[in-house]
Length: 183
Length: 171
Image: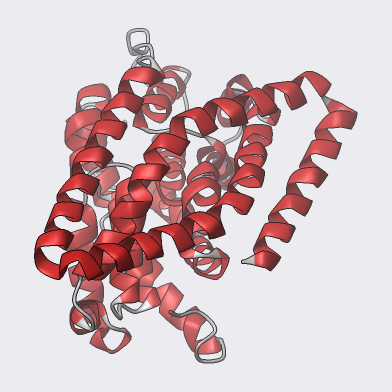
């Protein structure tokens, strides 16, 4: 995986991706609302909106802090720092660093994958790259803070986080030992 | 949830103090990032929350208990792996779905498997983002090393739940 790549593609502007997300969720919300109205009638609609309101009231006080904390993590650990850590470490330490860096990388696939391409061009080994991507997808701090804790609760989020914690390292070890993969 | 709110605010204030002492520009940058994210996330969340309500009302009582209940064991985990892999979209789609399933009797460990499968396998993300950007060779390496992770996280969660007093995580 040390084959030099062409320059990594620039991440697309966030706005386009965000508008797509908004359209998707608007369509799904409207469809489920119509289905709810047809199947459960007016009483079902009232019940559903009451559930939504309860969620909203629970989420709002947490959300402000969660967003700020996600912002501080993001600003405190710059992208260049993540790249430097990953390039400098190898062995078991490399996998641990890749796991932490992956979890600290905010944003969706349009942010994470170009960074992996840059890492690969910079000579990170395939075990570290797999650990990084796996940690980003399983345990991204930003997603846990902004979505999981507010919607599913901190107990569930903690259970899932701890149960997933060792897995990126194991996946990275496996990627390094895979026979017949060449470089 | 009251306690969580306080705990998260305390951690946030601690992080702000650390940045204040070490790297003041980062403090402002983090604040701007938070405001920017809020502008993006709030409209999505205002649409996702009613969806969570509609889905919770729509999914019949005990429906998820039969498919993903705590007693379904390995079968429930395997089904959760397949369903999770197929859920498209971001966290604003998957977490409301998980909430609705959980309210209708799914087991916590099975929901851990489902979220892990949605995170790691993500058929939709592989086709739209990963394969075009990273190439199929990387996708294959990632899936070969990752296909077993959702099940592993679910079974680990089950082992952890067995150590906790019953009912400490549930609906």
